[in-house]
Length: 326
Image (tube, rainbow, N blue to C red; front, side, top):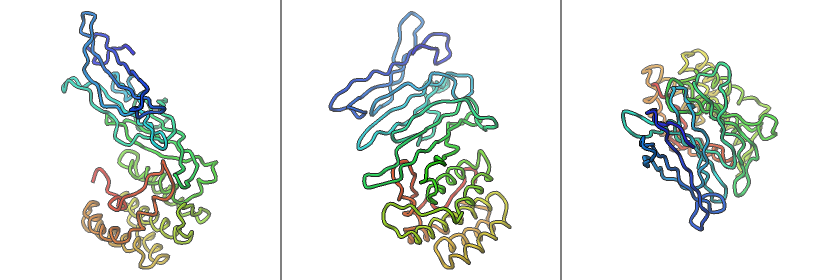
């Protein structure tokens, strides 16, 4: 691929050579490299960047994907073990640093899926193009939920690409699982500094629909799983409402949680967190105050790890949400 990557008026080049060997990390033993060369103005080229690659690289775009007027370079790296995973990497030339810098946050990874750039949908907060990760396998070695999903990543106001949404195929019967609905809601919550809290609140509320079911693959009794996931959904709903400034709604849902799950870990954590946040307006401090609850009550986070590949699980320190801008 030839283009002027560093905007100096001289044509540059990117090569992605690949070989197959016993040492390759990619499909069928494929192993490649990403080599970025700058033209020297005399018909020659010099190597300026060769990031470490573990697997098979494929060029995704050499275009202005974040809308800042400069050419960006995007590729996928596919590595395989028991299954194959694609990771999207995007870089752009930084004239001040005289180097290529990443312009996507970690985590743009999909198992057995596809990555493409598309036009932004109407009303999207981002600029440039939208990165979509689609498809994916969701089974685990001993089971799992076979259901595809779509992740939308955008660059907003010149910042690195971030995941703004995660949605499952609504036509798939497995999408009625409470745990998967929480993953959709969590993605919206983590993007709230860019898109607001309304979408997360809507999704957490819909996750409490009594028509939804338990779908753990590791033998947790359905009533116990539902109680845990509904408790987590309500706890996160209360956080989103309070952070959005709707204390009245947060108090109402806290009362409902305390009535439905008296003395549960989530009810106790929600009450303590809301009191602390209301008093101090410090979400981080409020989360630190309730962290011992989640460290002790391990099922509060382990229940999110029961659905197979492509479904993000929580660690104990991730149960309590702290917004980026607080």
